[in-house]
Image (cartoon, rainbow, N blue to C red; front, side, top):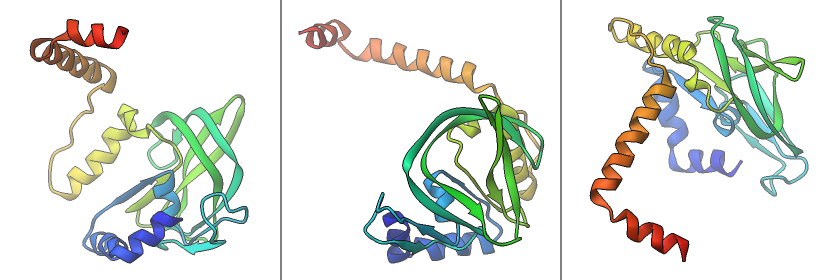
Length: 192
């Protein structure tokens, strides 16, 4: 809630709205998703002493914070492009539609249960979800980035598998570390 007030105080809310007006797309995850809505309510004082804060009003949702924290790994599908996704949720509260503008973004599954998560605007320029790590899902990421590439007049590209890319980057980092740091001294320091 305080983040939303800060965005308004510093003018970031206006910059985001200008960016969208100029054709930009906005994707909010977790708290960023909540900020995109019409309002955030905090009846239990979980995040603030304020009971309600107006959001940016870019998605027709409201969030009601709760005392219980949701922590779970999820799998699912994007309802727009039918791409598989996986990631995790870690949030307090629930966001729900308050107007008939836009549509649910994802269908998620966890331990035999399913539900719809997230919201996307009618023009498909503003979207949000509670799913962290969603961009690690190659097909979803490929589709999302290719929408942006198409708007810019660029050809589509295939997404790289993030796990093999990440592994190679970790190897590069380890090699750099071994060349430029005294690892024996660091290990000795850590062990004492």
